[in-house]
Length: 102
Length: 255
Image (cartoon, rainbow over all chains, first blue to last red; front, side):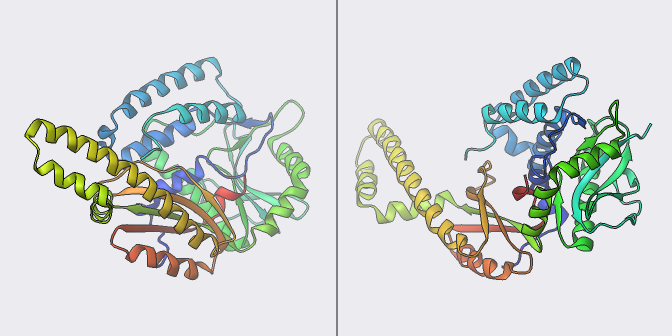
């Protein structure tokens, strides 16, 4: 069995890697935003196809919820530090329904 | 002003040469070095890349990955950073100086990681099963399920319905046990073929398939064949299918 690496097949796999992982810089001079992993979630949702998503209907509400909170957060902190955004979104993720369990 | 720096990855023996306009939105990608290590960057505004337009985001993500891949080929080893990692200037230092300060502070750790991940790649291994096929097999092989199923046939509709629910519950319990058993069995088989392994979260079911395990494996980038052979054996079983992706830069192991 050969490993595959075509863009179409593996975009979701790529997202799993480049949004959540990689070397982390913990420094005050970092810019990042709470919305970045969120973009990932939306894009993931689009890629998974709406049909599958609606089976797990809560996801949409949750998505809206997390979006609202994110824009709220963005208003409050025009620029968030990297570590802050990571932590807060990690928490959201842990609580979010329908993402991980089969 | 483009006074901030978007960072793609950490590399060894990076030299001074630009990699050309291969960055996000065709920005020029070039190294900033400290001693013999460095990072690949492009100049950008001190604000994150963000957009509501999915196509735009998608093209950024693919560009990020393309730069990391190119660097990986050219420099043999990379420590990739996640998307949208940007360093800005502060009162005392330019962004470039801030990056050098960071590299200086992390130098030992980065050198150690660069040698640790030399020629290594990560591979995604996702094993799925077809719950219906598994349930059918369990039904055939477990006497308690079999006899319960038989009993249902002889009951009036109302009672049969309740029995059916009870049976479903029982099958589910058996399937949970079965999934644990399979996970353990496959995990052991895969573990001996790789150098490091991470158990990732299971993703939601797609069509009639259900994800049983989601692993990220670290191994020599040229040595995926042995793992592939092992996975093929699992994939050939009627109840299971395997998704094998890679080689990826070692995103999951460098943080």
